[in-house]
Image (cartoon, rainbow, N blue to C red):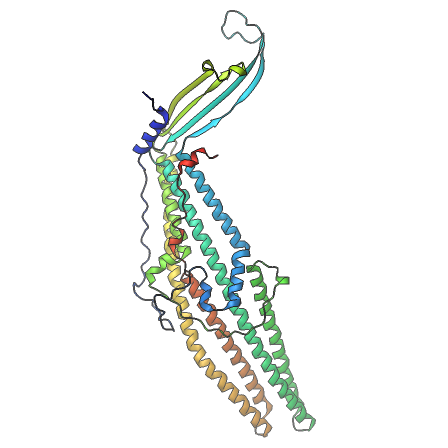
Length: 491
C-alpha cells in the first residue's frame, strides 16, 4: 500500500478548514446626487448614448490632428507617467510576493567542513578526557515550513496586496487623465494666444494708419502735437501688449514641451490661431460618475485595502500555526553522504498564541479601524468633488456660451464706433480723443472675444476630465494576482 505524505496533506486540510476573520468588505454609500439629471443644463444638445467619450484617447472628440500628435508623444515620453507606470509594476510584483505564503517554503543548504576538536576541551561531566581529533563533516540538509492559514492572515494579506495593486492602477489612470487634460488645456490656451496675437497685430496696423493720418494733419497744421502724442502712446502700448501676448505663448509652449518629454529649447509649436469649437460632451447620468472617475476608483480601492488591514489586525488575536520539517544527509565521508545511514529528519508544528501583549494587538486593531474610517471620509470627499467639478464645467460652458453671443455683438459695435469716430475726426466734428477711445475699446473687445473662445475650449477639456475621460472602473478589475501551482518551483 502506497503511503501518502503526511505534512502536505495535513497542511491542505488545515487550509481547507480555515476561516477568514475580520469584516467583509462592502463599499460604503456615497453622497447621492440627483439620479436622472444634472443641476445645470448644458448649453448644447445632449449626445446620443452611442456617442460616448472615446475610451483612452478621449481627445479624439476635438478632431485636431496636431493635438493628437502631442498627446501620443506624452503617452510615450512623459516622465511623470513613466514613473506612475513603474509604480504599478512595483505594486504588481509586490502582490506576487504575497502569493508566496500560500505554498510551503523549502530551502537547501549544502555545506562541507573539515574541523579539528581540541584535546583540552571541557569534560562537560564526562569522567575521562577525550583525545583531539580531526574530521570532515559533509551535510546536505533540507528545511520546509508552511503556515496553516487557519484564520485567514495569508488570505487577508493577498487581499490587501491586490486592492493596493488596483488602487495603483487607478492612480496611473488618474495621472494619465490629469496630464493629458493639462496638455489639451495648454494647447488650446496657446492657440487662443495665437488668435489674440493676430488681433493685437491687426490693431497695431490700423493704429499705425491712424498715426500716419495724424502726422499728415499735424504737418498741414490741422492736428495738434497733443493728438500726435496721444496716438503714439496708444500705438506703443499696443505694441507692448503684442510682446506680452507672445511671452505668454512662449510659457505655454515650454509647458507643452515638458509634458511631451522634450527640452523646451528644442521644441516649438507652429503658429495657428484657434478656430475650434467645443464638441457636445455626453454627460450620462450623475450616478454613472462613480464608475467613470479614476480618482474615485483609487479612493474606493484604498477603502478595500484598509478593510483588509483591519482583517489582518484581527488575525493577531488568533493562534499562528506553522508546520515545519527538516531532513537531509550528513556524513564524514562524502562518498557515503547519500547512503541510508546518513539520513536524518524531523517533523513538527508550532502554534503561537498571544497571551500578554501589553495592549499591542488592540492598539493595532484600533489604528487599522481609524485608517479605514479615514479612507471612507476621503472616498466620500472625492465623490463630492467630482460632482462639483462636473457642475462647474457645465455652468462654465453655459455662461461662456452666453457671453460669446453678446461679445460678438460688442465687437461689431466697437468696429462701427471706430469708423464713425474716424469720419467725425476727419470731418472736423470732434477731436482725436474719440478716435483713440474707439481704438482702445475695439482692441479690448476683440481680445476679450478671443479669450472667451479659449476659455470655452479649456472649460470643455476640464469637463471631459471631470467626467473621467472615457475611463471606466472595469478597466482595473483584472489587475490582481492569484496563487498558481507552478509558482511552487519558482524562486
